[in-house]
Length: 363
Image 1 (tube, helix red, strand yellow):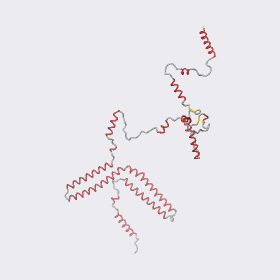
Image 2 (tube, rainbow, N blue to C red; image 1 turned 135 degrees about the vertical axis):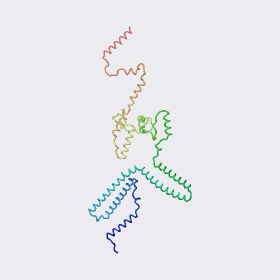
Image 3 (cartoon, one colour; image 1 turned 90 degrees about the horizontal axis):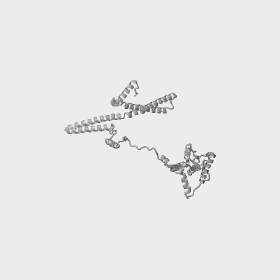
Image 4 (cartoon, helix red, strand yellow; image 1 turned 180 degrees about the vertical axis):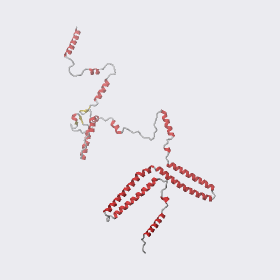
């Protein structure tokens, strides 16, 4: 039997197929979004749908280009590539709309959206409860239990109202967290009124930041005397001691001598360089300046910085608080400048004066 391929038969078949497909589809009320709905959510659904459509279209283009890679001409290949680029650009635009537009707005409207969704759920639950209550009332009316049915209805309505109130409290902000307790305010006011000093309210307890650390405290401590340690180790100890070669510890042109600490640091440095076959960086300018400050007053291997402080201490101890000056103060007032302190005539006059005094005693 031959198949009728005329235009009229094809149109009839197409119309029958479309009618059967429309009958299977659900009602328009369930598909079309409501008028009082949130337009942001509708826009989000449309963007997701268009994104999926373009993504499927891009996958289809890739599969088609892979299957027809041998039979495609250059012009067709360029057209396919342009079409892919357009689809990719559309996908990028849709992704930007979703990430930069819809998501921030949805985060801002989250509280309102939750309230609307909760209200819709409550309305659905109320309708279900109303239908169930109506069914129970009809059943109880048939069983002639009017009084009992009224009490059960009142209890169901009261329980529904309490559930609604509890949900409103849970979704809304808690005002108790922002209000302070009266007992705490009363105690704080009572404590501040004792001494009359204003004390600001303590919102978040926290420790006072420390400005001085352990390292700063250790640096401020009085350092140990290296000279005293070396004297104790060399003179008072009976243990054998390895002495360096003569002249190897003299530095700065004989102005000072290397200490044990410096020799120990040099030995560690030399041992590290020999064992690792590398050269450590030279001493920087800052380190040299620091060492120079630490070695001020050194001459001949001795420290002379405390000499002036010792003289000042002796002067304070020997100085009198009042009265005539002592012998030490008188001696300090004598002229100490070098050179002639007068002519030879002064010495001769003093001799003549002394001779006259002696001759007077003889008479």
